Length: 519
Image (cartoon, rainbow, N blue to C red):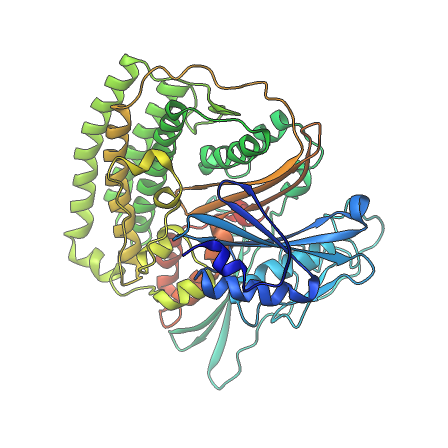
């Protein structure tokens, strides 16, 4: 299939292949909904990113973008349209494409652009109780509101019926996890509805990027979500490298892949331990914590950073692996494979543990697909989407295997993590065999004006940056979509029919990010 066969169905104004894998299709505002619906169906893709841009200074209007992925064509498709500044409305997609709903809410609260006919336009992250009406922080002329705040109540979905009880949980929780409010509707013990409210730690990250140099923005990208520092900075660097026309050498790509897999390993084993802990199985939880600590210690030995900060640079990485590093890492992988196999046996051979995780928290394949769920949660429900398998050159020649399960329960998500941990071990071994002298990356690139997507398969799933720079290389607009943005809603469906005491292990099997959502 040629992508032009699909484009011919769209009444477009202009089409441009901005980069090798990015197709921008500009349409009139009236054709935006139809164009998005065509791509949704023909590409078999959900809305992976949807955002607005305040372009009034340049063209006296707003720009609206909707992003789709074609795994078959190995391309991203971006539908673009203009919204006059005196209208500030567009046709909603959410009745036809549910995965657009959260983005419509976000665009409404951040820009004041209303999706007419949307299924939901309640506030998403800027809470009604503290954020004044009529103030839209992503407008270029936004000023911090002062004075009293007009308060209003957030309207949760009300489940009616005899014997229905509501159980509010959070936003403050035991432990050190982030804040989020969960409102359960139960009939006896089973959960019949769960509604989440997040945004309690919304930090205005996208606004913070505006006006920053590339160097400043790279440092900021590493601070968005601590346990995903490398993947965030990688996705950011990829976008800038496209805009500035920088070619990254194969050796730097291999090194990036090694560090990305190390980040995946320590997070996956931490999640496996967390699942064990949430069913009261403390010994394997502590055993998993030791494995995680060992990986963090190796990260520090290799890079002087336990969480792999300061490694990605524009054009490559700042750290090479010499022969001593490679030998140390190979020996380490041997020991960790043995320890991890012990952990796996402790869990999967214990009948009490298996009873708690098998058939618990099922997220069905169609539901996961309709919601746009990505990463571990998607692959555990039978959706074999992994950006490493679609775009990355360095994974193509080393027999990379996408790990999938079909049942979509806690056990399936556990097994995907187990499989991916072992696959990461094997990938790093193969990558080490290809490591040579990489040379220095381009640390002083020539600034250019442009737009680009940067993306990678982070340990939770699909992570995407869209960056726009001016002629001096200053960030004009940055849009970020963490996999948790899609996957939080998947959790609300997975718990239906389960009892409330099973919520913690369902939640941990997704292990979604509060900071990744509260951007």
